[in-house]
Image (cartoon, rainbow, N blue to C red; front, side):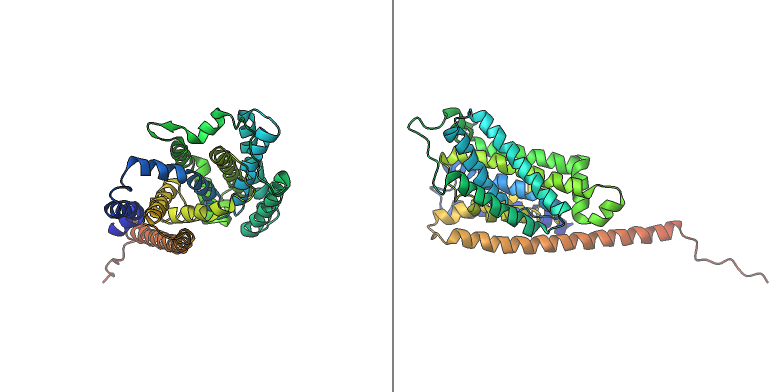
Length: 345
């Protein structure tokens, strides 16, 4: 029981410990509403990407194109609004739907091309990077003197209840994915595919179709993150995107060790992102050098992969032990009595 509680809520408790440590070390700057708003604002896009990366991981696949997709989506949003003069709501809708289409294509390539998801999405990501360079011609897309529509920039820059609006986007997305994965048949099918694709086929689950659904959902989330990035940066930078790839996978993989240890889940990913956000903010305020951030992300990724593997193995051992106990109990209660009748004289 104690081990289960540690596995489920250990990462959440670690977040609380980090907050306490940094608050004691930086009492004038860290435990403030201004710092909280800064953390929520800065980490909203990595959090959304982590939730997007988590969806294919549920099925046992990886989408390495999300960083490239983020760069393409935000450049495309700027190109349509600034270069083509589209109304910003239409441009945002096209970019988000375009992200979903690219995600579906990733799924088709992986499932019907029978190409490993690492290789397939790395290849499509490289192609997306090429398209980004073609659109921008290697230069930044800068708005004219009139700037971007205020309503568009307000998507990222506005506040609600005193906190940045993007933080509520993250919360809404996490709740939506929690409902999808934990409460609807679609989520159960995705988990079955991730646990044992052959067993999913045998029970009649169309594994290819649902895997494509997972990649489509990931692309949809990446498109939305690209729109937010365009509203945040207010320029189209063709080199932006790859720097978000590592934090996204750290959050998604580390999240599989919390709340529902042993499997990727939305609330665990949210807790993992909180750990990363608090840790990066704390070491930044302590005056760490620029290389501390990639060092922290890389070390946390290795830790996340190790912990995720351990949690998965522990979950399998626990399930096997439970099945053995059930069979033993069934044998005792439903089997024949071991006592033989007395032999006749």
